[in-house]
Length: 102
Image 1: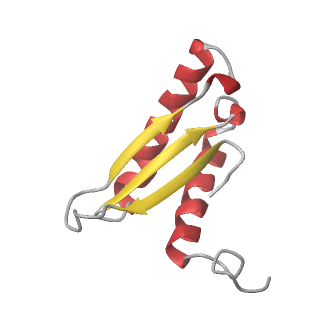
Image 2: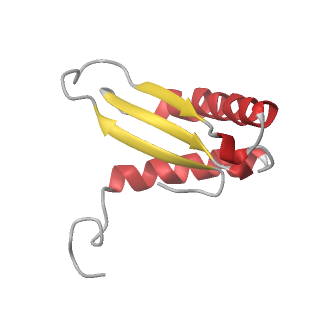
Image 3: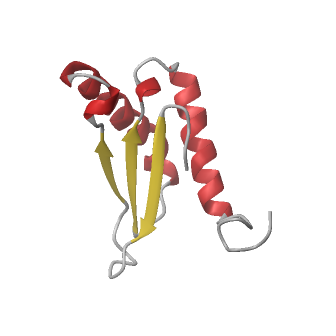
């Protein structure tokens, strides 16, 4: 799920249906220097601690990939973005993703 500040990827763990959710974070050089990347990662970690702690599915892996706006986007917008992305994941793929006509 793509948002202005991050990309959320999620996948069920193949052999761990009862394990707790795992979360990974990444920020490439494309978004800026080390200071900018570290700030983006810190904000995404705080976001995951707040939102994913309560909403993550058991036995799933999540990856938050920082985009340039992760550093400047207001905190309430980041929270809303992650909650919306998780809701879209729970609804499942749309017709375009499943090969249907839009």
